[in-house]
Image (cartoon, rainbow, N blue to C red; front, side):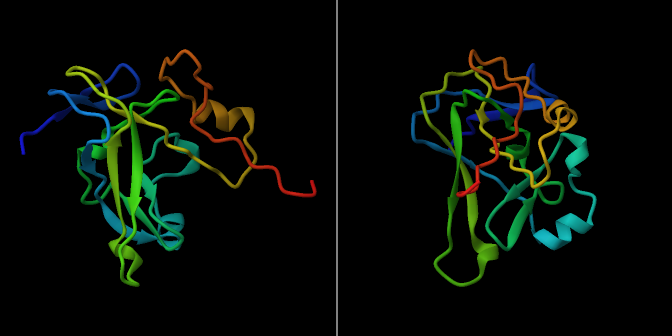
Length: 160
């Protein structure tokens, strides 16, 4: 299969991933790869502190996180957007080993050569979304309806 994407500098943030050939709506573009680590291992390590505003961590399931700081591929350079052209799709393994679950990036619309690939990171944090954290996790996507942050609104608890 011919390569359809390349990593290079992005106007959104740092590096980005760009189409170098047409990508069809629904096309599976790339797997998000990296080392499988437990949530506890990640929390105890240095692979993406909340305070950094930068992460290569992808929550795979309740047990594991994909840490693209280790053994990651160019999918880790796909930037966030409030108006994305891709989505992350988790494929659950049929067995009991949750480390075998996988994440794929798929196009949600046709993507032309030269366009940057983006998806909504859907970042949720346990701590309050203070103005300081919103600034740390600022969105620079430039979309017409940009929310200004990569953080997802907290869900209200029932009865609150």
